[in-house]
Image 1 (cartoon, rainbow, N blue to C red):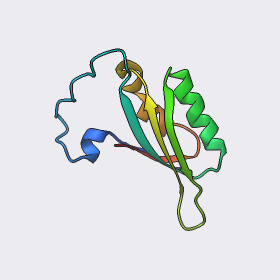
Image 2: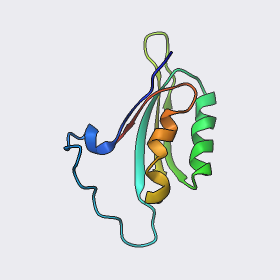
Image 3: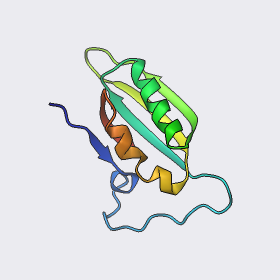
Image 4: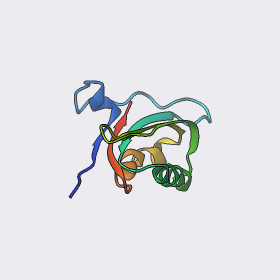
Length: 106
């Protein structure tokens, strides 16, 4: 049984768990969220991640995929423009996808 870990940006940066989030961005632009996913799969995981982002009404701004080998997992870095309400649970949803080992928001 595999477990998937999700580390929110506040915890990854060393901020206390109860730290306040930065203020919402002004204007119509959606905030940019960046994630690093460790995966066991190949290119199939790309389709799952992009499909999930699109279903959550997000826009993929940048995508970088490094295929792993027997010594290390594949790594997918993605930047997404998504509103705060939809984006607040995106990291947890990414962590629940098949072939995703860990998700880190930065």
